[in-house]
Each structure stands twice: as structure tokens, then as C-alpha cells.
Image 1 (cartoon, rainbow, N blue to C red):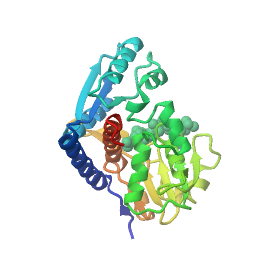
Image 2 (tube, protein in one colour):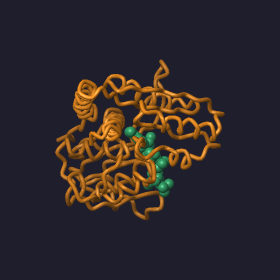
Image 3 (cartoon, helix red, strand yellow):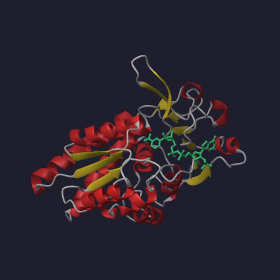
Image 4 (tube, rainbow, N blue to C red):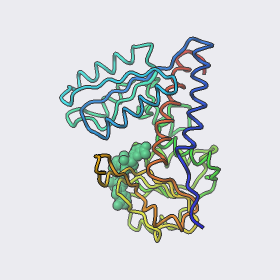
Length: 295
Ligand code: NAP
């Protein structure tokens, strides 16, 4: 039997409806409109499309969004000044600096400059530390989206052997950490693989849940997974373009090859991606409520 396809679009749509209802209620009862500032430096087409999607979604959910677009030559000092302005702006509850930044700007320094109470991407060391300790904080959007997807798809993580391929600060490390937490959507036994892993396939083949975030198109094939495994494909790789210039995307998993063997699988596009944006909206709502003392 082919794998169940876990639709991130369907789950994200349901959560977005909940967020939109809460945003409307906040406005009606408290006159409060959550505000998100997105800061884009440079003209990377992928970043442009991600930021546009974030602003579109915010708008659709009733969240106020301000897109700030700066030229690639913007200095680090100028960017830090802008982040400081957003920190001090009461209409802005969440700040997102789209990564990657141009090479002359120190990314860590910029992320550190964001007020942790407005860090809706969850990348500030204060939030990363709280996440590790299992304390309430802004959780990073992609890992949080994966946990939410697993929970809403009814996939049991407690006691499961989870293998994560990739150890980035954005996806691999935080998803491994979240799955380890003592709470629903956690309690898993987690293994993390990377380019220095000696025998990656020995690990991926015993995974009940395999999460792949390597950035290598179609690297995981059927012979690398266990029969019935849940496969979460985080990868977004541009493998070409259509005649009209639209990017053709592929995940890190060879979807067609794995489909017959996996128990459940997320597609690319339409899997983890919509969840990432949805969690950003949820964090922005949380930030607004916290700022107003409603949480
Ligand atoms: P990244 O920073 O490039 O990290 C990739 C990780 O994968 C690294 O830890 C690397 O190991 C590991 N890796 C690469 N090739 C490998 C191989 N052949 N075998 C084992 N491990 C390997 O990437 P990222 O930011 O985590 O993103 C990963 C993918 O997810 C990308 O395709 C990205 O576009 C996508 N993504 C999607 C979303 C979404 O919302 N859907 C969000 C974020 C990222 P080393 O550490 O040893 O180099």
C-alpha cells in the first residue's frame, strides 16, 4: 500500500483559520492588531519569494505586516539601527530578518540584536537556550511546524526511534531537541546524522520517523528507509525551471521511489513549507498577546 501523504497544506490551513479567528477576537476585544516586520537585505530570488509569502499570509490572517527591503550593500551598522527601531516600535510585535544575510554582515550579531520578546523566528540565543531547557519561548518555525504536523497527523513520537539528517541551527539541531523534550510531540529517542556520520544508512534504516534536512535533492531512496517509516522531507531544492521561469522544486527525499515503502510521507512542495510560515504567524500572535499581558 502506498504511503499516506501528510498534507502540510491541509494542516496549515486548519491552523491558519484558528489564528485568524484569534486575531479577529483580539482586535474586537482589546483593539490589538499583531504586527510583524520582515527585513530583507539584498535581492536573492528565493529570499524574496519567502518574504513575500510571509507578508501575504500575515495580511490574509489580519496581522499587520511591514516589509522592509534594503539594498545588498546595506551596512551592518545600518541594519542594526533598523532592528533597534523595530525593537522600539509598539506596533511591531515580531521581527523577522530573512536569512541568509550578505557576507559582510555578521548574522549572529544581527539576530542577537533582536529583542528576545519580538524574536518570532526563535533564533535569539535566549530563545534557543529556553527551548533547550524546555521553558516557554518562541520556538523556531520549521522545527515547531514539524512537531505540530506530527501531532496533528496522529503520529506517536513517544518512544519512537527518530533519525534526523542534518545538524543546522535552523532545522537539524532544534528539531532533534524538540523531539527529545518530555512532552507531547517529544519523548523520542533521537539520532542526528551529518556529513561526518560514519554509516548514515545504518541509522536511517532503523528510523520509525526519518526527518531529512540536508539540502541535497532526492538523496534518500527506498533502500535507505525502514518499511512503514514516517518520512518528513524538509529539503527545498531548486532543480530547474519551467518554460515560464517558475522554479521546479524537489525535496531531499526521492518521493516516487520511497512512496511504496514508507508508511507516511510529506510532499515537497506542500509539506513542511506551509507549516513554517504558519508557525511564524502563531509566534507573532503569541508575541502580541505577551506584549499586551494577555498570556
Ligand atoms: P544547511 O545549513 O545547509 O545544513 C545541512 C545539514 O545537512 C548539515 O548539517 C550537513 O552536515 C548535512 N548534510 C548535507 N549533506 C549531507 C549528506 N550527504 N549526508 C549527511 N548529512 C548531510 O541546511 P538547512 O538550513 O538545515 O536546510 C536544509 C534543507 O531544508 C534545505 O534544502 C533548505 O532549503 C530546507 N529548508 C526548508 C524549510 C522549509 O520551511 N520547508 C526551512 C528551512 C530549510 P554538516 O553539518 O556536516 O555539513
